[in-house]
Length: 98
Image (tube, rainbow, N blue to C red; front, side):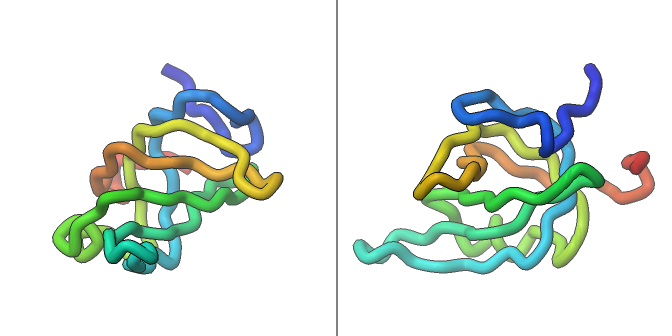
């Protein structure tokens, strides 16, 4: 499967690929639920990523920065494209060709 560059992602598309994660931050919603806000990037650009109903363990496992495999869906939020992440796993940098 060919890499889907961030610059090629449109609203409402499934996302299942490896990207660089930068600046992950653990936050809480107004109801007190945890989520992770992060930037996802590759050589074509950068997107906001959100993982709702996250855990502190998932947050602590994320590289800061580093590579992750994400599965989710893109959506428009306040006219900006973002990725809602359902699954995330760390990828060894030696296994990634940039």
